[in-house]
Image 1 (cartoon, rainbow, N blue to C red):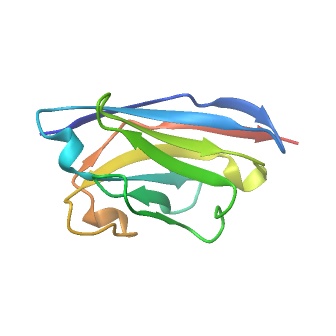
Image 2 (cartoon, rainbow, N blue to C red; image 1 turned 60 degrees about the vertical axis):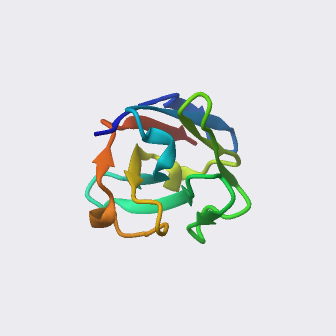
Length: 124
């Protein structure tokens, strides 16, 4: 069992930056591949970025490439999402999720554990 708690959301101006954190607890938390998803009002939850358990591989949605960076510190059992040059599409609830170490899927139904989400609002 893995518990995930996101933090770091808030209000930011367009063009600004924000860093989200996801604290994982559980004996084997560092052995899971992790990802960030986001869900805007009235829209489906979408994949943003993923990272494998050893932090050796990352994968990004095309819409955030070169602007967002996912990283993890297994010693702290924490995953981060650095978001730069935010635009209005960044307004959403951001969720941290964990899955098996075999691959980094982009479909939300392939993830085993979820956090409660943190709201990010980008103002113009």
